[in-house]
Image 1 (cartoon, rainbow, N blue to C red):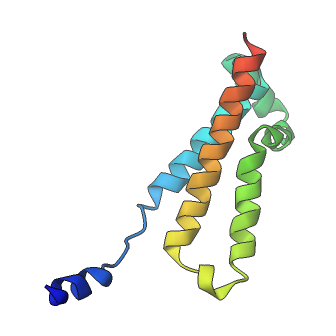
Image 2: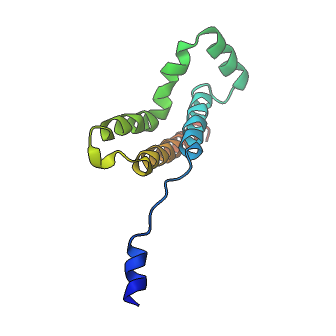
Image 3: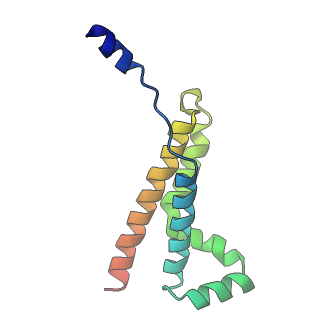
Length: 111
């Protein structure tokens, strides 16, 4: 019995697949761009192809994601946080926070 308990203590945590934080970040950024342009896809595509710096200016709509990237950079300074498990979860949680804030902003804007 104690052997089973001691074996269960050392179960290795596997980080989520790398595509999950990448896909979430891209999805939230596109959602933020669409929110910035009031869900007008044609205007978004036309403006970004003519004036590309608007895409950088629209990053204010996904500010929690920007904070998450800064959080990821700061975590690189601390040796205990330099593993793929913590880095991926930092981006995942900040992407979810950014998406939630955009949903709340959209709810108030189009109501």
